[in-house]
Image (cartoon, rainbow over all chains, first blue to last red):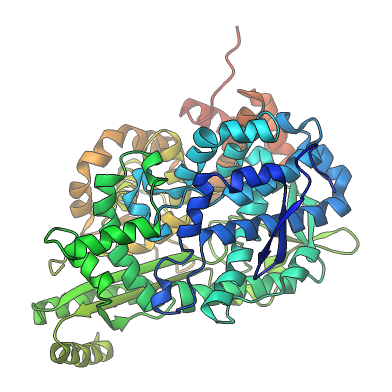
Length: 432
Length: 194
């Protein structure tokens, strides 16, 4: 194994329900014990998904540890087979010219550990209320301005600067950034398994041990830099990963109840954040628990946030009256809009909300696409060393939608009126 | 919540910037197709010039790409802000539609100060074919990467790496011409001699 000297040996350990024991060093413990990282113990991974799946109360804290573990497994597997190429490639980064493998391993672990450190209370649902509306900006702030001294002192000079460049996906750092955020990144690889476990569903399962074992490095024919690829035979694990991503998005992350509570949280946090998040440091002073206390208070007081707060505390939500399905195209989007317009005219007493939830499942170019913005190649390394495009070889990938977009019309009103709304929608769905 | 505008899916700043790019394209390149690849690259370059378009681009194998732009184009079509006038279903040709004025007016204060940026990017690059845009995006990508690693790169250094990546796909004269066009548009920082 390649460790930096001193207190960087993995002498500590913690149990993880997904990966078993996760080991870390005394120096890493100083980061884990820091208040900005401990805050993640109280930021739930899936906001209020627990209204649908009661077990989904796991947090960004354990996910971050899990990503660190998985990133390390992949890095150690790659270094076992590609030590000379990795040393040469990573040595091109000035800060890594001395001990490139040991430093890169440490950087990958720290990047994985800290990738979510800037998430505000209620994670993505709370993002609209923070300065810049992007948790990655807060994560970069934490690395560059809060933990920088500790990082540079405990590990090696320049650690925080390289981590910032990795967070910004600087192309000079090639496959290291790809490892933590790319088509086969360990962030998604961890949360699919973890969210499945805690929700009690099987949609996100795939063979993670085989995924790690199947990864290899190849020289990208375009850039000449090392990039992640699969050994022949590993492509089926990747297919399972993409299918898991598709299923989890449609069945869990975009569940109608989750979506409507995300809407209430977004509205609440936009207003509350405007008053309370004056700087990026303010974001780090709060978590789900402290903001939930504010929601409870606001639910009892007349004010602009009361209606959102009461919906959350009283668990009183809008109901779906129309939805497009998972693959809303142009025609379905327009039909939903026409239905909404007519409903608003016919039922002025009902409160309608249109929810639009688009997400990308993967970004690989697939055969037969016309004029698609070509974005990424992922290769299979054949036994003779030749490279084959995975998306062209796989009969599965091209059948999985690249993007998912679901539009739903929610309504809230008297139960008898909602019954009329639903009847009305049934008629419109046949004719519009 | 009961007052519904025509902009159900596209009532946001990113969509407003895309509409402004389509508008500039209509004026500057009235007879050229504006398809899915072109709108991605033109948005990317407009952002490179400094327009605060709220979308993030990932640098992938073929250069910059943004999910947000792809979804915004679908939203603009659904809201009749833009329409696809292509007769060939394999290709797109986006032009302004009946609700364009509404979004441009709503976000005028945010978008109009960057009209110059939009016109520079669309004017310099809008007439290029998707293949040319691949060339240009790759050139820009290499220049940006070299600048990050070793400071402002020379034209020779950028073109040499380009040749090693794309082999014989593009002519030397085309590479040189498009490099100069990028530099003239201020999209590539040049080494100044003497």
